[in-house]
Image (cartoon, rainbow, N blue to C red):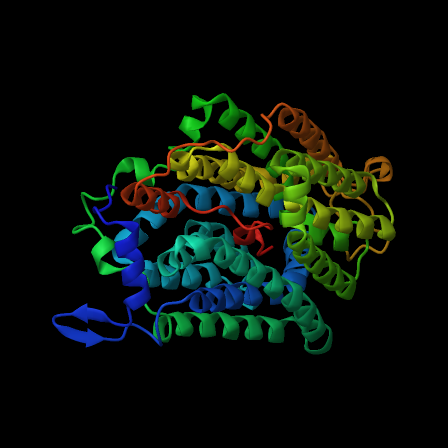
Length: 486
């Protein structure tokens, strides 16, 4: 899509002064107050708070629905959801540049949360709908675009950080609350509570969220303005090999984020069904890792100044490799807690990658390269869970919590020797650690940090870059939030 010729200064003036929308000569309000970052924060918090409440109930329902193939089905469900999100994200992002953000916030939140009430009605339809909802599971991309509309360049980084922190805060609080409600009142009440929060989110968008996209930066028509290149999810990936540094960076991202995406899709199920964590323990685990991850982000700036972006990436990858090894070989509860601490420390990898791109790319290449990294991560969100599910299945790591002896179930449902579990309780994590070692080797050959003294782009060019970021999609938050439902 070719954006209209509008300078950054003009856009920022529209952002600062926009209080109403002119329609047929009449000034009408499009929501409550002016569009702001606060509106985006509320939308994100409510959506992931609703899904966070279901963290513990979903584990029980997943195991009850697929007792012999729990991890395989979990991987397939999350894999289908991730791949559909990867395929649909560019098109939805491009359409939001034409029809505005509010409509697509409403659509993505509604369809992402639509499966929630099905959990107590029909579990098969519940999991099928979760997979299909991946088409619309791109709320974060629309939220980041909303934030870009209502902030200036100088404010944007801080605003993006607030969005990610809000997501983390919702996931720190809600699983523990959901586990508490489930232990006292049962699963049905937790589903009702999650449904109520989701309905509140939809109502908030309809009534309170103003449209953020200025009319003057929208194309005059939506049909011809959207090109196939913008709707093509592989467009950014095809450009990966154009530059050696970009290719190496994307290879490192692929090798490291593939196991990370797989881990996020199953770690809570794994802790409960394989490691014997109780409901309360899993909730506390989520809370502690979330709080530690936020703390790590606070010291990220100091590490970047001390070590530089490249070496900070390598430190993050080292922690990620160690935590995957702990998850893979650990057979005791305290080992899982240690792995959780390492996971929090490893959370600095992807902010450091974003900083590396910012430092080592020309000013007019920022959006393009960030889009490539986002495309690679989006692909991993689909492939990682499927890879983990298949490997768990091949190694017969599927426990039915109804069996008193917790015997490992074979492919035909018959108990088999648990030699695999005794030696390597989590085979996919070990494979993931080996992939991260390969990523470390690739990252070691990245060029040292070097600020490219490219000419400062014109205001028109800066607008083009920001527009391109909105279309390509921003960097995903730390914990792959669109895939965090299971």
